[in-house]
Length: 112
Length: 112
Image 1 (cartoon, rainbow over the protein chains, first blue to last red):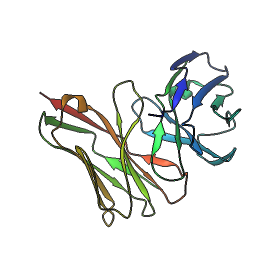
Image 2: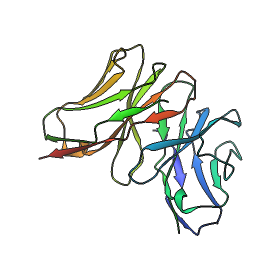
Image 3: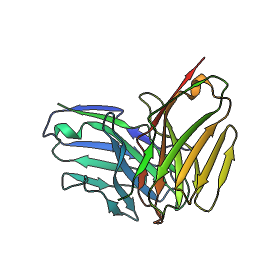
């Protein structure tokens, strides 16, 4: 069964460093998303991406964040200068136009 | 703004039915979702229902939707210890590719 994959599974970084989280969405899906889950809190929407551009973003997704689909398969989230409060589990998801949203296993980011 | 609420904990005996409840505020919700998250793992899509449906059944899972009261429930028949996890409901507005708003999750504990 097709699935969303994410790498790395864990990432530890120093405050102020740049990180890139990678995702491979399900191949025939058109919409791509990033969400995050801070420990003990709700899963929060960050950004959605369709037709090679951002279609919606939350107030969390400020200038420190960017997304890219560099080729036909990968979808990346870059955090330019990480802060302690960026520590969270980051989930990538993808979907067709309607129906289910399929999430990847997540990348646990720890900022020290 | 949009909000989704769930009770935090539910404890049942193995073999009993579990009913996890969710309320939401967005009257324009078109799809409602149930996800399962096991410890340290990602969000597994269990099922989803389109807002013009009242009920959807998939093996041991039954979803009931009361659109008038904005109430969603997930019933798990013959609950097993492997069903122990956190269950999230989420709603999506009418935009294709629109963001999901998640509840805070219900931790289901199944005792043998």
